[in-house]
Length: 117
Image 1: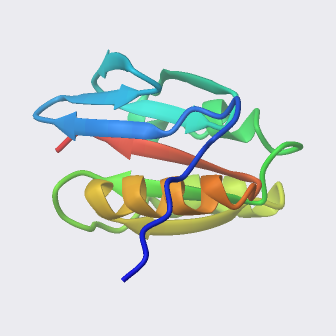
Image 2: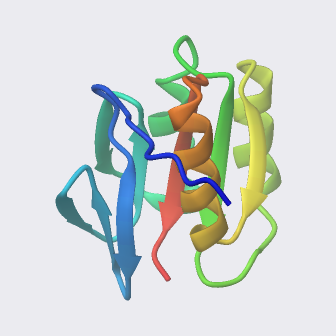
């Protein structure tokens, strides 16, 4: 098997995660986070659709990591984002981190909103 090192240029990959934190581009962030190729910030969780909505003109898809287990999103949260033209994909947070990093390396227009594990 041939392994290829991934480079992210100026984008911020998710380097790791653990109980209550994420490491994004080498920086440890506590609690829920919203990460896009050029920024990372705290996020208010599933009651906060406004923060990811601010990325509507810069992303096509938002991955939502719901913690250790996959869970349904509140209907209003999903509807608000989809009406703004943002596709929403739900998965557990570890899978969302991996998926985000792979698509980030491909230069896709994505972001990820993560609840801690």
